[in-house]
Length: 356
Image 1 (tube, helix red, strand yellow):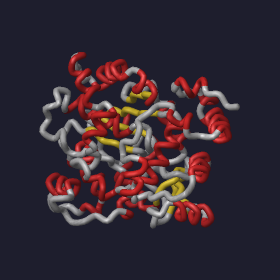
Image 2: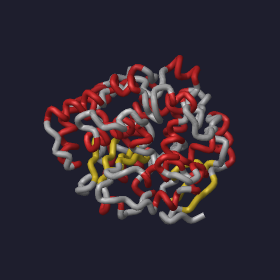
Image 3: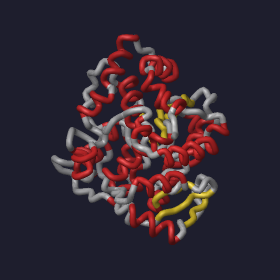
Image 4: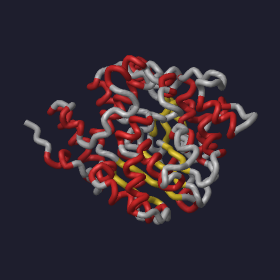
């Protein structure tokens, strides 16, 4: 199948597909590559791919773009709050983050999730019914929400630049977040165990192999980052490292303030920094709606044992959780795919860790 982006679909080899489905119990549908790039995706992506590629972005839109688990939700909340809620008085501030700032490509995961009819315990579907009256959520709940939310729209994607029309950067602004691959690995692992749509049951070592061999959904991570890195000087793209956000949030918010033309005062930026801090976002826990509404999507035993959507929010946490051999593998992979292309990650521990 040829997509509007020019990519061709290719079935993942039987051996790889069988192994992935064995370890990711939530993947009940086929897996595909998209070429060029060998993007690793669920086959249901093709149901929405052309509509995502041809999404009509407006000049007032901001697209938050990252690979999976690079601090996307944090940046979603930062951007939406700066643009819509700098004084923390917006009436929709308690709605779920992915309702106010929709995750536009999330629909490919939804076939693994049992969507019940709208009701008092389904804030996501109730919100869809309000914004998209008479429309079918099975035709792309999140994509239709992204189209329907009022201006100024803040939208989130885990897709790379090459799967969205090249006109994006002429029509809207993009905030791209990159993160140390070692922290991405561990955060993605927790996410994959937590969410029923992935339901990962394999080992850490197996997950590391999936990561290094570009066999996690949205991979290759290195190509995802490099596509944005090449556009980092475009006036409508703001490239930021997760580690810089952690090290100097006020400094990074001031840069965003300029990029987004939000003209917030230092006092307002301080409010934003506090409101979007890890502790405050974990306390609200409103990814898809009011607190606890996420429970329908997650594995309760994993949440109770390892933590929920907001686990640690650290930079450099990988150093205490990986063996020396795993660190060596990651170092070689990072040198090949990032350092050799001028991309270096700024976690102090990344620069100074010792392997004996």
